[in-house]
Image 1 (cartoon, rainbow, N blue to C red):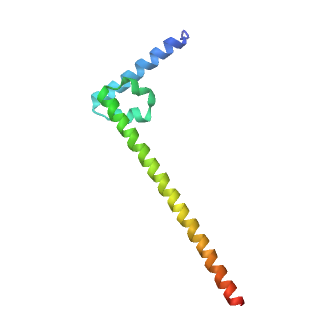
Image 2 (image 1 turned 90 degrees about the vertical axis):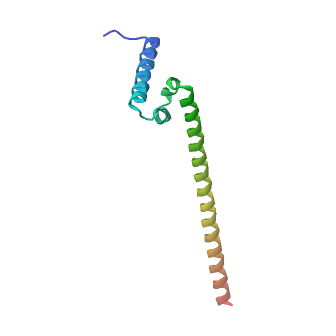
Image 3 (image 1 turned 180 degrees about the vertical axis):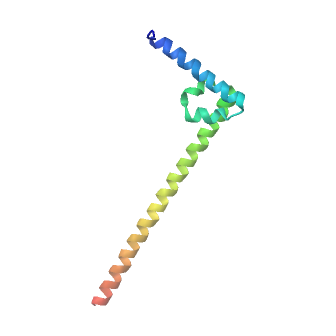
Length: 98
């Protein structure tokens, strides 16, 4: 078997991705979801599919951002409760020693 140069490999890979995207499209599968999981498939999407991909990416980023903010708030609340608990314990201990 002859070795392929870089251009030939790229052309072969592009053809394979184009076939995969077309197969998924003809089967009625979610091509945008495939492109989300495999970035190389992006260039084989139609314009409406690319727009939908961008919309989904933005939604995913918002979800991640929100969940990170929620985790940060929860962590801050837990730390505050721990500080308050130690403060309450210190007050109880100092009051009983007096």
